[in-house]
Length: 488
Image (spheres, rainbow, N blue to C red):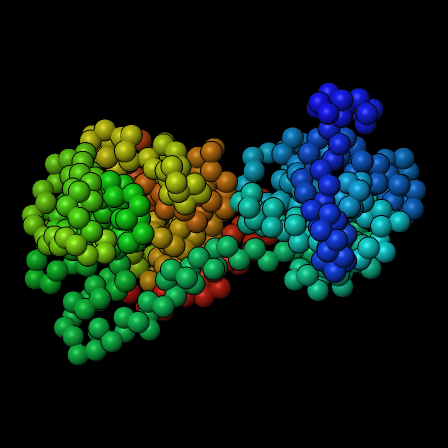
């Protein structure tokens, strides 16, 4: 029988649905355990229309929260995401919407709402909770750092069981509701994973050591370490071995970038590099060294003074940079009341293979532009400065605040950010060039060439870091010390 004959016999313009393999095999036990619904994004106008029809049936007809329609401006926002629940027949039996709270720029503040389950499908059980869980996951995937919903009081226990936290009572559509907040822990988890072990781990290095141990007084835990009795500053960074293995040229480039940025945060001018490289073979080592050499040339012909190379072993790369300054800028020089400024290079794009993780701006810059950015801290000499590290913008601000014996507040809407990056990604990624500085109110910004700077917070009495939103709400994302290294 031809394909066209099948279409004619079914009386449709499309092939019949493929039979379920479990039904063909007669596996009734497995079929009985199948979930009776699935959650997915609305895949077109028909699915959205079915979801809106459910809303009208429940919110207008059943609950009488609205006279004729519950549609609002959030439905018209193209950024609003609609998730629907479909039963085994494909019918839409529930849904929820989520998206930015208003029509302005998406700063990572999202709200979920209009959660609905068809009356004849509530017997299925679990549709509502599944939609809520899916909405939380989607909001975080979209870069949201604050995700809220207003729920009817009878649904408060359900949301609480799912991990939501009540904020306050509110009124919506003329009826009592509770504002609930989902605890987005992206920033806290990042700082805990990357920096929390450092204090206990490194404490033994200072026992019985000289005054220069761990940076010395005033520079403990800093981006670089002043060398006692000289104007030298030393910085050292290792590259993640998996990155050296799979992206050797980029690993070589980054080994220079991170060290020169560390020196720049101290106000030091680079004088040379030392590298320690291990590779599986000569070809792989050559690719790493090509990236390292290209970066050293791009940043102003920084000489590679020497190092160590070993072939026939698992890949690894560590680079040490030496710089000079008579007066290093400390990372712990901040004080309560100081303004927080972020100066970052917003040019470039996400590095291929590192979407949402590494922002590559430096490979597209000229040597003059790179040199201008490296010299910015030394020229402006703020009270405190730190290069944004693997802890991201917020985690690095927490490190600066910890070293300064302070807390910090970051104004999310004021943070300079590329339009291609979500708030969640930008505040947690590794940027090509980004410096956090603090100084007295009104102090001038950094003369950092193509980089963009803005005051976006302040140091406070206390500890940790809070995100301040346009409505004045502050959500605490770092609750205490980041590294445990203490006041510098």
